[in-house]
Length: 296
Image (cartoon, rainbow, N blue to C red; front, side, top):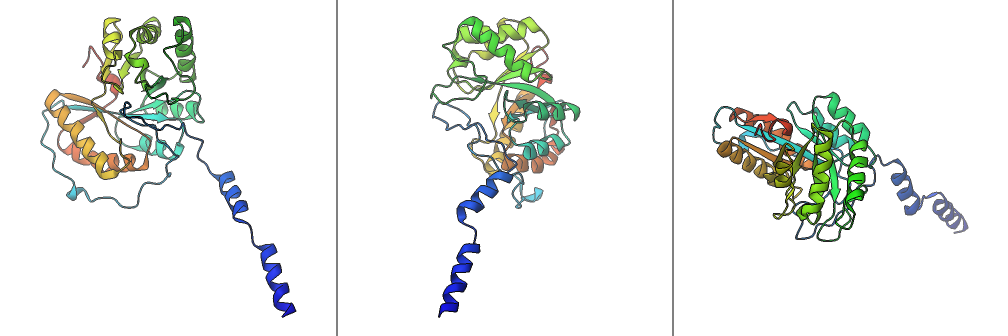
């Protein structure tokens, strides 16, 4: 009896506590703390609310199971933008490794801002600044944000500082920004920085149908275009695949389309498996800079 009690006590002393195991896991996790975002009904797309797994889902639908795509006329172009970059290296590197042109839109002041921009540029991908802007919901879009309460001088200084974080950027699109992008004064200040620098374009993410970003850029002679489709408002492979096919159909009808996704494993998987089908249908993947006005 005494021996049994002693053995039991020794086992309890040697067994690690659940808290100790939790601390160990947290210490070796490679994922940075992501920008948190709880989307409101006004926001058209959320920032990923938690660091996604670095590995895509093991289940991949066979290409033969994908819905058919109508043949596209010669010259039909589709540009893919991956927003919120600079937070999850493994998944973002998966996008960079894809054998198609695409554009990585990088947030300022996050863990891998400079690193992912450099890697994307070295691989021949497009690089943009993903400019955080004020939301209608009051959700914080993250460091480097532009708000409607800022003075003109403050907005200009903030945009300049954010561009300095991503010096390889060829253009800018808004991160969130359902409130700020609908404010004509704010957008004149933002686009004014791009006009002054020259050679930079603006993509309106259209997180608010009332956004004036594209029209402001056009009026100030800054090359511009707007998002046509969000790929992953739901982090599901089948859903994202369907959104890709919708973007392809818009491109087939209009000659080109712009689709925005995020560095989620489900999005990476859906894009990877749908590329051959879209290419077979005559869709040409291009950098988003190839679709801005006046080229678009």
